[in-house]
Length: 86
Image (cartoon, rainbow, N blue to C red; front, top):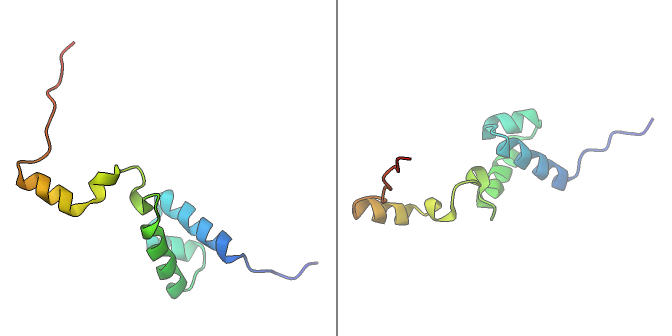
């Protein structure tokens, strides 16, 4: 029998990201992967900084810019298109 070899840091980070993209909250992802609190916190910071959008990857890039949203709302909000009847 081979001795137990812990998973690589790359595999742990990928597993954490997969859990988070699947909708698992940060605390539960750390518990499911049996991570120390410090490691889970570090992975969450890295996950949120990712270029692919972190937890809200499907949201458009401009929508993450809080100052843009505040400015648009200050000017009357975003335009709404009327519904077309067929």
